[in-house]
Image 1: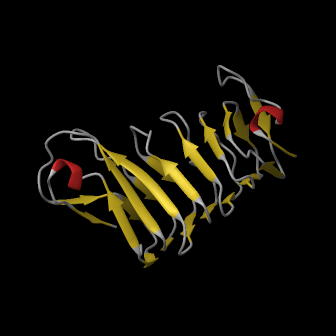
Image 2: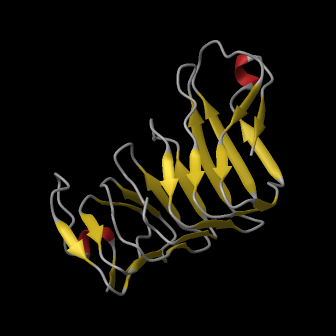
Length: 185
């Protein structure tokens, strides 16, 4: 199945619709698209478009998630990919709007030119928790909400089966509020 978010069956305004996917759903959004239905099944999803696909439901599909170059998959607070066997980020994986941890059942792979976006607040250290391994490259962008942060070490990513590679770029909003904080992976 292929199309923009509104063309894929199951997208609703309340997120109560479910779509069983045992193949691949290919999203082709060139602008901003939102898919609010629950994607279930053994299949996976691909973001083939150059736009932003926002997933706002608790998805339970078990297949791989692919973000192609130029594309973005963003998760809102309720949005989850917890059972995805593999997340391959060749674009942007945006979890800035998450106020709870993002869990991935499989591995996370990010190539050298791509971006992982995360957010932190003074009261919440939200993490990317990976049950498998993490292969890292590209940019880590951390958006810091205004407020007082304690100097120290904040763990943002935890890969239970280990990590290879490192982010080649780190950008953040901490400089604008005048503090230095290190982040562990």
